[in-house]
Length: 236
Ligand code: TMP
Image (tube, protein in one colour):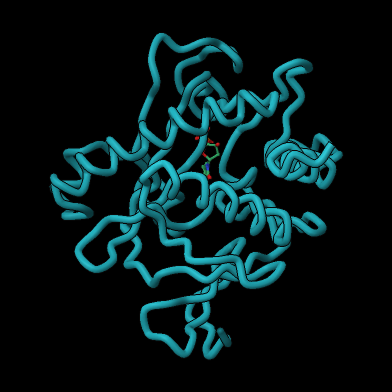
């Protein structure tokens, strides 16, 4: 499948049209941003690793009966996906306190939560992705009630699968962000699942294996992404 036209350039990916109207190529860049793009940099080979990590996770989720936009990985940095209409909501699932939750609630990072937390953010770079709830979603028609119910069930199902999956790889899934899109009357999991949008901590050492290493200038960023990739692929 050939790239025809650049349709959209985001912070970490570029979307291209292809010969087929219902299919896009999602190209993974090495660019990394944080704090609503106020911090910018590159993480060498991140695009290649993220494409491979996300492709593998989407495949596994499809096997679990979760519908995604993933069709196939076509090269190191290119993923063929269904052309969805992105629902402008970021869904964050949290298993352990960290990041903005710790700040907002004044609790230590790593503190256990009695239950899983599901949060919604309005996907808007201009506004810095403000947190919203289901009333905002309804009042601003961001998604229908049925879509939101479906998204919640899917996000929790994805969490249950990924928690167990990463645990088997010696990784604690602290939190992560998902995006969904509309396609042919259905809602599909879209975007990516990579260390850019997840917090992944080594089970034994507690080392961070995700974009917090970039956000917080912790060093060994490339190494962390490679380690996640190798554990996922089962490379020792
Ligand atoms: P937070 O603690 O900063 O709210 O982030 C929660 C999770 O969501 C974390 O795994 C990183 C991910 N995330 C994104 O993927 N994109 C974003 O814009 C933000 C703010 C968080």
